[in-house]
Image (cartoon, rainbow, N blue to C red):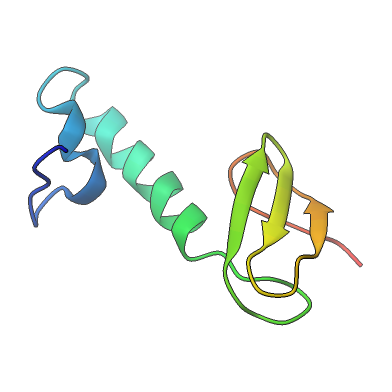
Length: 73
């Protein structure tokens, strides 16, 4: 797989191809995706497709944002 560096994290796979500002924006979005929590149990969620999220532990599926799971009650 790709060699990620400490400084740029997961966007190190792009290298210098897309520019620093775009890589910074992508890093923010990817970090939000990875730290998202389930609104019911508070554990990690996974993105099934655009706007559909599923909790890894309790199995609840819900609709939210395309890149971050926002759910209104």
